[in-house]
Image (cartoon, rainbow, N blue to C red; front, side, top):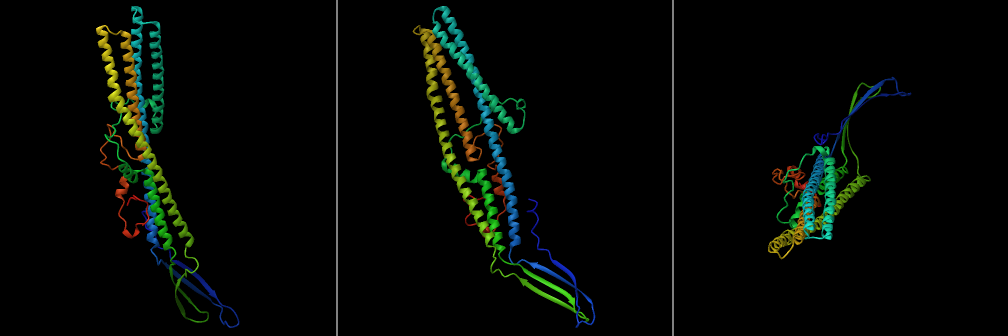
Amino acid sequence: MAKAGIPTPWPNPGIGIGSELASGRDVTVNEVIPIGSLSFTIPLSDRLSRQDDVNQALAQLAQADALATFRELYLNLRARYVQLTVAKKREKVREAVVEAARTSLNTANALVTAGGATALDVSLFELEYARERSRLLGARLEVTNSTSDLSELVAVSPWRLGTLPEDALPTAPEDIPSAEELRDLIVREHPELFRLRSEYEVAERQLHLEITRQYPDLVFGSSLGGEVGERKTILGLNLGIELPIFDRNQQAIAQASKRRDEVRTRYEAAAHRILNAVARTRGVVALAAEQHRILRDDVLPSARSNVDIAQQSLAAGSAGALQLLDAERSLRQVQVEVLEAQMAEQLAWSNLEQAVGFPLLRFPTDPDSQGRTPPREVAEEEPNRPQSETPDNAPAGEAR
């Protein structure tokens, strides 16, 4: 960036100082004559301004790379935070399930004493209680791993991360963005494509520079001297230019052109790969959301209705307490399934915004960015370039 702030200087002038000494039979006086020369190189092409363009593009590439890296780290931070909140939520629900399983086990033991249940029934509730305690340990292990991953990213000890707020889970959009909307976001916001567009701009301007270098410079010079044995001063003027007959910078132009084509190919390959990943992840989000909806709106009300029916049957004497415990156990399992579906939907949304390269989830503490998130703001602040310098075959969606 420091280099881009300094205009490319003209070539330095050349100065030469020497002497002439003549000797021989026709020289009557041995005398040393001082001579001097001064030359200037005048560029006939606009290679100096083209070099300034290259330097400016390199500075913008460095800035774009920094901001794209910032976006990638920011999305990674959001993803790990979502993983931690999901793990915390799962641990909390598992603790409630373990407590409910323990209560059911105690009730079953009491029923055995009263003659309303058998030892086999108690054994089943004991098995459920043990399995739920094992699942709780697995949930706590997941919290430990997620906390370590987040602390590693932010370079903070796990014990200093603090306690997550109650509303730590982000809010997903009401509707899944369409494929066209996601495609526009990818072209405009994805950090990898943003970085490649900056690389393409550097390659394009480098090609323009190499083309201007095929035109030679004009050399203007003067010399001052004399002749041995005569009292006179000779002033010489000369103009020189290299004839570009054989070397017209063909190799450098070809290399720069191939470099531009290479960046274009990388851009197209990355765009296809990202679009495929987003399409797959978008499908996962849709399936996870539908599964969550079915469990929440259809299965969970049915499980609660079964508990209500069991309670009414117990009060009417047409069912025993063991049937009520079974209904409550089924309700707990359905509640866990609803939670798992909700967490799967949250993780799917997190994966989708990772694939798109742009935040889609809304956290309670998110500031109002008004749509200006890096690296997009760099593209908006880049000064306009003359129309003649816009490459005709730049990658689609190139920020100007």
